[in-house]
Image (tube, rainbow, N blue to C red):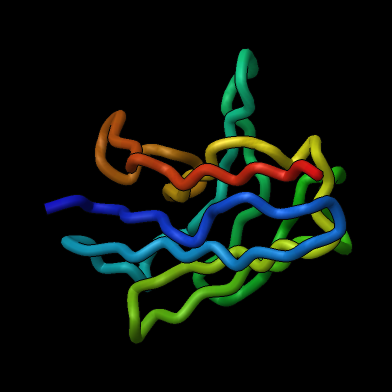
Length: 117
């Protein structure tokens, strides 16, 4: 059984929107600070945003004002609402704890986001 399952990616035109979801299992979800990360081709994985157990949020500069991270502890799910998407947002998106390492070096399969006309 996968620990973290990301979904919601796809192909979208510039200026479009997507909502990513990450469903967790096997952990006490509410105890974790959770983050969304992304990895573009040929680049290192980077932090996009994180949300604390109390709901405070932090974003990397490139997505501020466009992306919104949220969590639903009852559903053990973290979300990333992405608006005004740009081609440079193209990447595989992953969720994990923040800092990463919810279980050792584990990462889920991620969900591909492609922004292209």
